[in-house]
Image: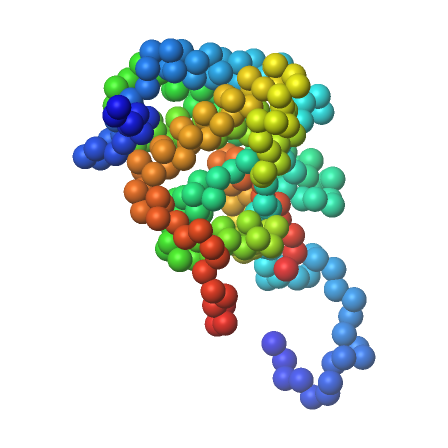
Length: 174
Length: 97
């Protein structure tokens, strides 16, 4: 039996998308849910929104207020535009590098949203969410998105597939 | 800047930030359980044009030590870097060096 090919592959300066129609619908559906979250929740009401718009100053509420005032709306506009781009290109067989960066941003944001709502840890496994079908389903989607982000990154930069599995030795001159 | 004729330790005035314009701000990226190691490395390379070894070293520091200083500069520059890192979903803050 042939193994399933990677969902994304780099080819001559663009990214080939090998997703099924169902997978594309799922991604577009998640993107639409994500837009609803951004439009109807805030940092005060939803932990995932707080994670997407974190404070710049950990111990200076006044400066943080200014930072937010300057950066929040622009970042929100950027995120909503990225969602729209993903929806418009959900059926595309190939993406430009720029479009693929937008996909990457949205797919990674979706992982942050699901991961935050699930209160995920680095070593979370299926067993942690098995008791609640809704959480189990969300975790399965999270893992699928992890695979999508991982393969899209490697399609954009194949050398990242060879990232070392242990830290490099400390540089004494650093 | 005038020549120092005596140790200034005792007479050094209490300084506040307003008269310390050169003191750099440091941008810190914190470890989180979601962002992939390859993704963090890719963001640091893409956003700061860091060479792979530097991006990879910083990623490992984030992963194993819990955080790493990824850039520094004026307050304005640091705020801009923090905002860009937030756009990529990295958990970034800034602090005085």
